[in-house]
Image (tube, rainbow, N blue to C red; front, side, top):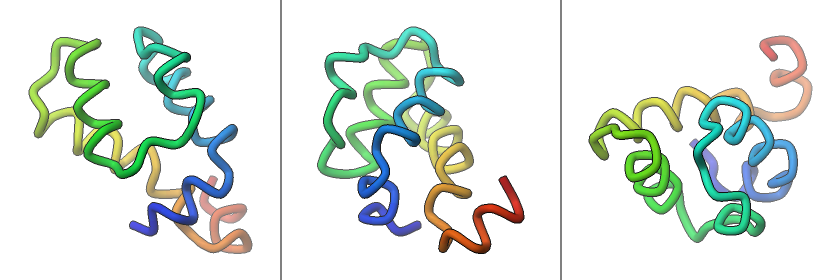
Length: 76
């Protein structure tokens, strides 16, 4: 997963994250976190998940966001 590609369009990515995990704190996610680990830890804390569970969920959610634009449009 290319974290830089995700953070370049953080508005779209963070909206998908908040749609999937409504208990996330919009203030914490207003700017791109330094890495996926920070996002997974925040999701785990707010949604009663283990870190491992949250990491898998966040990776799955952001998979399409990490693809090149022409490919992402076909799978999204």
